[in-house]
Image (cartoon, rainbow, N blue to C red; front, top):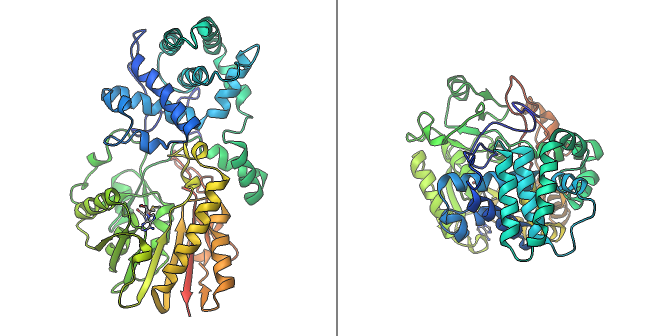
Length: 462
Ligand SMILES: C[S@@+](CC[C@H](N)C(=O)[O-])C[C@H]1O[C@@H](n2cnc3c(N)ncnc32)[C@H](O)[C@@H]1O
């Protein structure tokens, strides 16, 4: 999983990936790097999501004030720091004769931000060191550590390759997550999943039609899901052909599986109960279903509306709580792509592992069970319910379904057949449920491998 990487650096791929930055002059990017350390504190210490902090409209005020190149630097630093956090901490610990004093959290974040740049970003190392020293000097709590910061980071620059090699054995994910992965997937698979989250994901497109042609046209790879994986890509996806015409949308290959599990949906009435931003609604409409898209969040349903407008696809939109959605006629099908811990998306959202924990997983699993019971109540006899989410935890997937099946004799599982998914057979469990992980779908022809972690199960009302 290390395509295109040299010395731990990777090519720019998208706005949230590690990137080059023209911060050559000693104090260039000072504001950006200082902001990055503060925002890292907000994620790690206050468990605020990165998406919330970096939102261009509702995000952190200090971040919003920065120039676009500085914002890109902040994003790259934060994503990199969170992806590699335990290894960066181990690297710094190896440079320190004694651990940092208790309570030196601000200093910890300054050092992590600098270490992420030195070890993984294509920025001048001296700028990362100088700014960290300046930042320590500016903070009365940290001033006495400025010399230490200088010495530690200069040593990190000198011993970079040795440090990268020595910390490779450190798990890049927090202990609670590795334990859960190991309990579910076994030690080897858990390690592979943890390693996979270090590689930024490729960009996958779902196309309205002619996937093989699109793959050829974009020099991409046709995936077993029918998605088109782009080769390493710089710039805005909106610059790709036929964006305005609405011929395709960005959707991780794994996220495209649940809607496909309904089979032929032409003329069927299907509700998508957690619909925004609308990737799965779009798939169902494009495949010929009449879709009601239900979404609680006003901001997110506005995005869904924009997305459908660009794609020239029509669905009925209902803004509100799915528990209040009770159509007069029972439906042919319901898709419940429920809110979850999102631990399957850490390649693009590495903050998840530091902002969420086991208690969130348990709480979300209980909510999903309640949502799934409501979803089942909306379909007619013989109707299908597809339950999915992007968590890697069985508590939010296999167990939700197993418990409901045990309680409701009027419901049966419709097993997915591995032979219907050549290339993804390993992702179908013995019970016929989908379980993808970021370690699946090997890289090939120089193209990034991997998939988001997803769970999907098909149920039928008897
Ligand atoms: C995982 S996302 C759905 C992604 C979407 N299916 C797609 O493919 O683009 C979950 C969505 O459920 C929405 N949601 C959460 N609770 C809800 C509720 N009680 N009623 C309706 N929507 C809800 C969230 O706002 C969020 O947009």
